[in-house]
Image 1 (cartoon, one colour):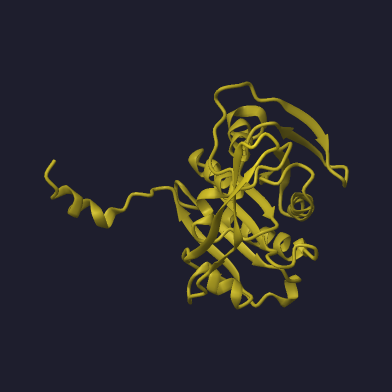
Image 2: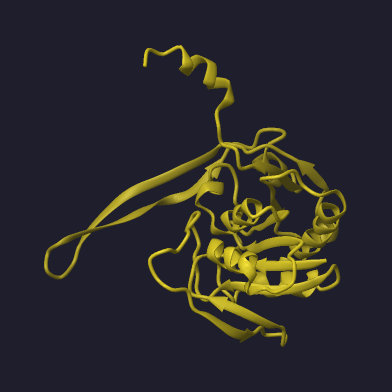
Length: 253
């Protein structure tokens, strides 16, 4: 099995390094990741400039490639032939923060997996729930989880245009309670507009506020993480609100 590993935190991310180390026990790993942090970049396709790719070496000696484009650019380049061998699986991560609920649309980690799904490659987005404990991250549990899920996806496959969004508690693998297949929960954002002035008196703005929270309902990604379980949420690229089609068709056009 040929596995493409990418992320949105950049080629030097410790989460990517741990993921690569573990996935080598599952298959042959190719690495193509951004050369800088693209967190919260969303689904990006770079069309207005050339993309530069450089040879890199990870901290453990693994050869890799970095790109000055977005995470989704990395996957597209690989699928288009920059990685010569056929790619059987895309694994994106390990993100140090969870990607839950509506985070999915912002996350470069998840949208890299979306790009893989668009190209017809089974894809997994891996995130660690490092919220509130960012200085004590244990990527080993998430990396071991990625190996287990990768084997299952390779064995069973995924339907066309789907991916798995996986969130893992920040715990050693032997302390994780188990696995739950979940739905997207409700993310509660607490954003605030922060207005400041530069030395010339011109205003500029930050999107600030408290960190987001969520509603830990049963069967949701939030609920699973809160209970110490790995959350596995199948995501379909068809965002059509099918239940509204009939109603909207009755409107006077």
